Amino acid sequence: MKVDYLIVGQGIGGSVLAEHLVEAGLSIKVIDDPSFSNSSKVAGGLYNPITGRKMVKTWNCDPLFKYLTPFYKSLEQKLSSHFLYDTPIYRPFYSTEEYNEWMGKSAEPYYEKYIGDIYGESRFGKHIHDEYGGILLNESGYLDTKKMVLAYRSYLAQEDLLVEESFDYDELRVTNEGVSYNDIEASKIIFSEGRLQSNNQYFNWLPQKPVKGELIWIKTSENIKVIYNRGVFLIPLGDGVCKIGATYDHEKLDELVTEKAESELVRRLGKLVHFDYEIIDQKAGVRPATSDRKPFIGTHPKHGNVIIFNGLGTKGVSLAPYYANQLVRHLESNAELDAEVNIERFFSLF
Image (tube, rainbow, N blue to C red; front, side):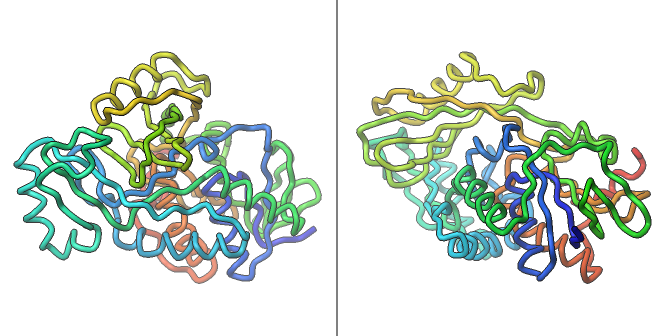
């Protein structure tokens, strides 16, 4: 069997990349072991243009968010599934000074399109502590990452584009003409393995900094319509169920839930909300983050047919579509990769 591209890994990154290659008219085969858990299946899925303690625009915000929504909506239509939820994010202020600061910023074109409303007094006081008011953000929401990945997996299987097995590096042959893996021949291979990159002899020299994250799911009788986000995020999933996250652990990189993480999330949630709830579930995953918090994208320094698309980290939902498109244009039309994501920035480590 001959294809243009062999893709290893089918999390958010691998799925989104595969779709861009298919839409470009290229032939693919995807190899993924469904028994391996991955962070895509337990991710928060939040996409948020204004982030961090200092509430600034997320890195490369404008091009990322301009591309994000049309891509996922088109994918929903193709898969006859619904997994993108365009939902405002409400972020309460901690002081009157924050309110005044954002009133000033609201007139700036730099922020204008992402700001819905700014409140100088409580707006959602029935649910959360917001005595100083808060800011309601546009261009935000969440992706049901598990549903999207599984829906795309079904599509790949239906089109005979999926091989469900663990990738065996010993079976890969790389030449100047292309690559071969068992009975598959391809012009190029793209690795999008998430945290499993550490096992990859071609790219294990890149400075990964994976981080474990835990989330809890709660059930409440309150009718919550927006995402609350300050110190912790609360995503309403419907029927009183909400997803709460997330913790960050760079040391213990397993996928086991812990009482410590649950207690931490409950403590932070208590600072945000004041309604009753019960915890109904808890999950953990390891995000494929990087040392400089930018993705790993580009071609191996010695093997021109071996490529990586990985390291999307905590913002994979917003990063994957734009940079998958950029990578495909780079591979097929020699378009430039952004220097901040191109793995050439780490060639000195090879």
